[in-house]
Length: 299
Image 1 (cartoon, rainbow, N blue to C red):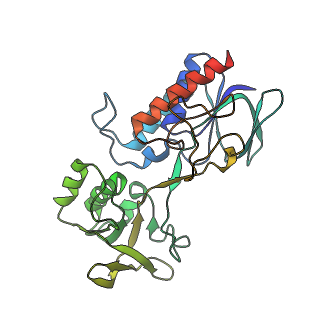
Image 2: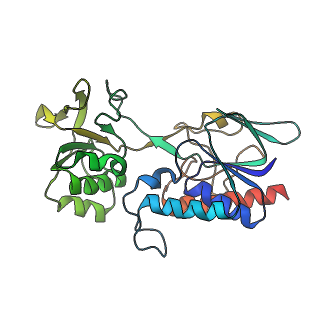
Image 3: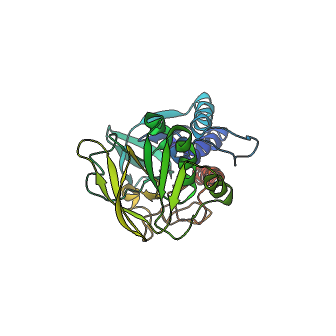
């Protein structure tokens, strides 16, 4: 029996684990994919206090080591459902079994949003990618297409420009939507070619990506490329918790800055909850708040 079961090993979940352990709570972290969440895919983090510059994966590894050294248990499993028994104990069902906890913190983060195009899923790993950090080096000297206009897309464009011959950034909106410092870097990088009001409507190639078909203000045409990188935002996967917490119309867990839900003992932290700002520091703040709230609940 655990005092606190934390679902998700992103910055929110791992920060929650640190605060819970400092309050001498027995903690289990369950993660379905990889530690670090979204930040693990960031090529460079420059907005975390006291750390001028670090890769997202290195930052995630450092925090994970800190959590493990304090004695947290960790399981690489996918949560399928969470229920609260009459005795107040939570049962967390995963694809490997059932865990019990006196309280639960959901810090499940979000997943990459897909374009929804034919052949997109079958060509993942064969030219279609959602992580420039992971797959960018495979396209050294090649032409690639990048879809997106926010901070993640801008960071990806800058990273890919270091490997690829040309990066063609397709932006469906009339302008960039990311931070000015990143926008300016993209604008002065000669091998990044961006265009606005442009949509990718088809992926070309049978067994691997050979190009894309785009619809632009000046007409439709094919763009040859070896890789298609998609960075158009994220979506939450909160279905396992919908019986215990309310979801908004976008699927995010309804919770304010207190990180509490309508079920006593169930808390939520990080990008999976309703909030205006989703950043590394706000995820960590949520983790601290949720953990302290859980500790108060357990007392």
